[in-house]
Amino acid sequence: MGKLIARGKGADDVTIPCTPGKTTTKGVNSKRVYVEDVLVHCDGDKNEFHTHLTTDPLTSCKPSHNTDLVATTTSVFVGGKAVGREGDTYLDVPCAKVVLSKVNQTSVFAG
Image (tube, rainbow, N blue to C red):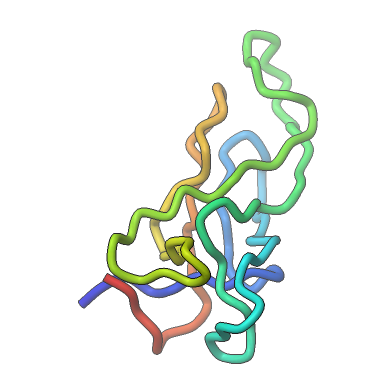
């Protein structure tokens, strides 16, 4: 079985180590494909804009930023873009590995 498909519009959780607490999925590329009444989150969609809260002067994170999802499925596409799945990552930023950490639906999977 594959991994749970992610959805945009804040439906699922993103772990961002440089910012304590949760942020969420944000944008959606799909204008037609829904999973449990929310449009799916695809390759290139961004996580929520967030402020970098660490006090480490050596970090090279921008004070405020968001990053694009790098979806890794090779079998499920929406509008030519791979769907995001639980465990997929966002473009690396120098200070953190940003992960689509929790999909809050339990019934739709992609390989």
